[in-house]
Image (cartoon, rainbow, N blue to C red):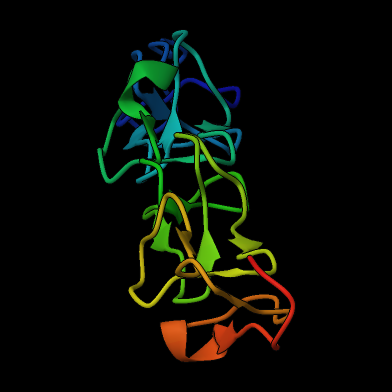
Length: 149
């Protein structure tokens, strides 16, 4: 039997095609396996399963379409195709849009004290910070006399 098909009977010439959501990667396979987490097979007879795109994740087994790949929420990310989980942005960073593939450092005069931020908090009026990726308002320093923020 060719890849993408299987036969449980030795020497059989009948090789049923693997169903949607399953695959057989080797010629002569005796069974089709379910597509693993963060992959899918949207056509029968697959020899490999397609990976969920970066910015998505999935724990579903035997998925039959990319709809099983769930978009990472703002404040989370997945940087590689085939991720089973979306990772939370660390304190001092953020991901403002759903489907993020990375987190950015909070810019100057902002901070993020909690993991999973979708926005960074502004320093209070009369304070500022040159620090990138600040993790607390302690990075916001009082403006010098004769200056403002």
